[in-house]
Image (cartoon, rainbow, N blue to C red; front, top):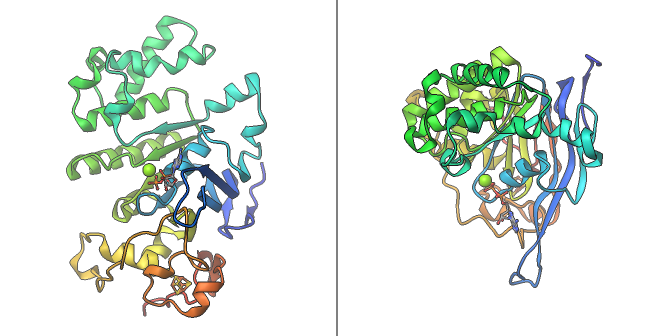
Length: 342
Ligand SMILES: Nc1ncnc2c1ncn2[C@@H]1O[C@H](COP(=O)(O)OP(=O)(O)O)[C@@H](O)[C@H]1O
Ligand code: SF4
Ligand SMILES: [Mg+2]
């Protein structure tokens, strides 16, 4: 495997040895006609990103911007209508049979609502062991399966006796731990976490985030961590990608993006997020208006209807994702990116 740092087309963000490489992915849904007569909803429009091994990429944006659609593409639950997805250089959509099954093992998912995603008629132990019914070669003996279930319960901070309980006997945080144990059962390389702590109380959120960080350190697993909440992403992500109406509008290291957001949308999201550090509180920028329908997105820059900097040029020219002058890995899709705060 090459250790060379490379820069995939479209993102410009350097990731050594990426486990996941998404280039120019589009996803179009056929829906009822909108006011303009359009019935093709572009949920993803030219999305490119990379995920390094053992890295966490935070994917942020308001509801409806395409985060879950991207998650479903990465899980191979939706086929993209354009662009490519590569895991370790392989396009999983080209795989069939045993190769496809082996591949599916490598990417697992944790959902927002652990209750809805766990079968209430199965015990925790049965839930964790269920993926091995499909992947029979992993733990062929009953004894190995039982031992591995105990290990996984321990790994996520549950007790061995919790294996006998049903999901409804757990608290929200414990259920999410169970969801994480199930995702880990197949030893994945990548876990896609779609709003994994959004349904939890703040104190429980912190425990689950710490568990995820701890597991990553121990196991080297990579995460795509999806949230509408920038302040949550800040605690877990090495790099951040900000989405708006199906496009990535800013990407960079967590440090770069939080120290000085370049895209007005990122700045607005950041200023609306509660800050734990009052000294760091920024001037509040209120996002004007509603998110436009993705069925009829604004021409030019999609953010222009809510942007306080918009000019006539923004209405006609689509801004490309372009690097900051002194930070080649910090990209923003804006004709007039914000200057770094001095
Ligand atoms: N199966 C589908 N059919 C039609 N439209 C869909 C489908 N899935 C998602 N969408 C639309 O795609 C857009 C992105 O949705 P989604 O990926 O769920 O956003 P997010 O997870 O960021 O809230 C939304 O406008 C949503 O209504
Ligand atoms: S391109 Fe124009 S409308 Fe879009 S974010 Fe930049 S300044 Fe605002
Ligand atoms: Mg979603």
